[in-house]
Length: 406
View 1 (spheres, helix red, strand yellow):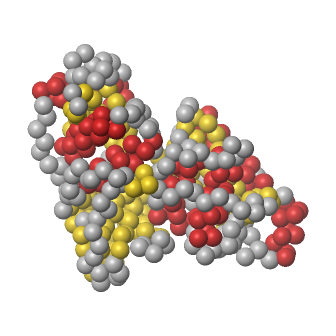
View 2 (cartoon, helix red, strand yellow):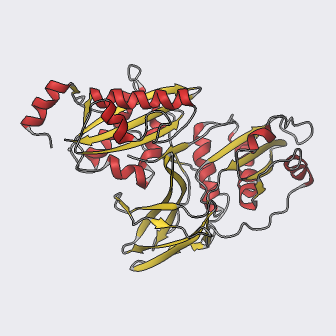
View 3 (tube, one colour):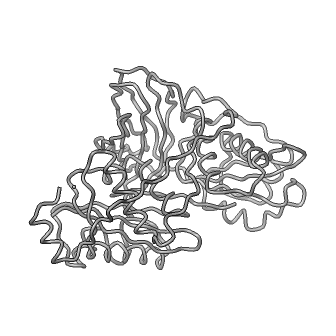
């Protein structure tokens, strides 16, 4: 089993003059009745573990079985073992047996839920199913090379109904947070502190509010030793989402995403993206456009209109990412968004960009809407037009959304 979920960074009343402008430049008209993205489904089975009292902090000591230790030490690798990842891997392996099916995209939602419940805030996660189903004879050739890309890992062997499965989880960890309680009271403020593993870097914090809106906080610059801190307010009850982006040479990159529960109980079950494909005649870019405008209408915002020039710029960036084997807002050949728009002779008053990759348009939309730093662009009332491009990279869809106002 191998799925990579990345989903990073950036990223509507049109007047008569605006309509005339679109007629000149070639905006695509909004479909009359864009379908609503199917709502996520709650898993009916009871939660296997309780929520940790804290998120972040040092990983607990976790005793591995002899078989797990043998696999973890099969070949030298640079990953550090994290007990939270192993606990989640064991439960995930057991759940896969009980589900009676091969791994699916929905299992990634369940895995992320298990990681959060163990107190892990890691965003870049890759699970891998090891075959055969018993510890003996598992071929780990090649797994160690894959692990070299990850900073922390865990392994778990799950057993149920006389079956055994093994799951390895690798994460790319770039920040370590001090212990943060998962439950809070309304009307309080919370200090979030931690350490950036790269030292002196710039962190961009975002907060998703219970209302569904998202806000960006002032950037936090880590000291020479990597230490950083910022404060968020929790004025009302509900579920908050805290997201941290690392400002890198390749553009902002999501490094942590976790919930806070204010005067409400934690999520009892994971929300799983249903495996419902878009309309048969719909391409991924059309599906993303329709899902986005449905979300805007539900939020009381005017829908966006597509612009062919922005479409071309977005498609070119997707192709460049796939051909250049990178994923980011800053192209090694064509630069950041402003430079790329200028090269296409596009000069909007305001612009922003979202990029994402996943196995379907629906999962891309869910990931973007679940990220405060991306949702803030998607639900920005100041934008009036959008360009959407997609490209295929193996089994994944790579997507770019460019928002603009004139």
